[in-house]
Length: 156
Image (cartoon, rainbow, N blue to C red; front, side, top):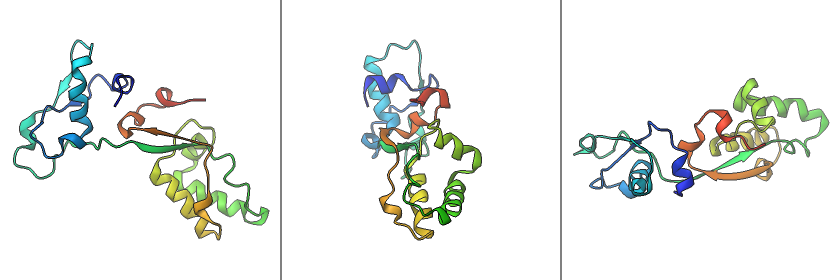
């Protein structure tokens, strides 16, 4: 995680000092804790390290893996026959719900990896090659940073 990414964390994000945890190096909370040396905040939230003592799975664990988010669906219907367009579009819309579909279409909301697969599956179910679907652009981010309100991560 870069310092810039760290600075995007909410003020109430819980850092984990639990270096004794088996998954400490894979945990976003612990990596954030390690970045406190460069932190200029007056205060920060820390988890109770006793929560994970003797437990195989920490209930506070957040993976330190970036995900590939997609933005925009302006060209995914380009190779769909006109007679199939309505059905395919409705199938894709069901992946998100109507309101979210329009946010995705206008690039006001990113598309998660799981949603990208749902869109590909919708094309496959309608007789098209879903694996050939390409979204407008892609970005890699930590999921915890993407769960912020829309105005924090829109890049229009």
